[in-house]
Amino acid sequence: QYVLRIVNTNVDGAENVRFALTAIKGVGRRFAGELCRLADIDMNKRAGELTEDEIQKLVTILQHPAQFEIPKWFLNRQRDIRDGKYTQLYSNYLDNNLREDMQRMRKIRSHRGIRHAYGLRVRGQHTKTTGRRGRTVGVSKKK
Image 1 (cartoon, rainbow, N blue to C red):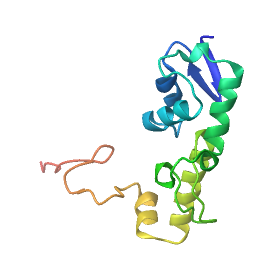
Image 2: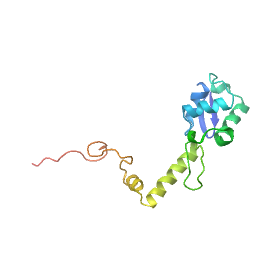
Image 3: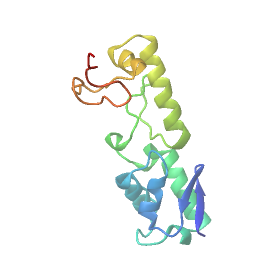
Image 4: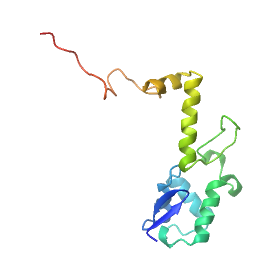
């Protein structure tokens, strides 16, 4: 198969499994390698050569990483604000949670939320001279 459909994402079947899985949002190279290791899939195999069972195994591990003894620090959603759980977010779930987090920060008027609302840098970068794209720059000359 040239294109696989895994958790609502098109995955290139010509690439190695490990790197093809990184097309899924929320799955990086390290996590993809861990998925392959836990599912007993040869990492040199092409993604198009995977069987339906192997794909199902990958999806199961991705959806329930705690059951397969992936350490908490390896997951991308740690101590969730609502339920305090550790999970691995991927695809649309990642987008939705990021959007909810930003809305929550804006609503409670936290420093980060205000910076997000105004479209400014959030992580403490200097803004005096950098990141001026989109705004007027320089001094207007008197005639």
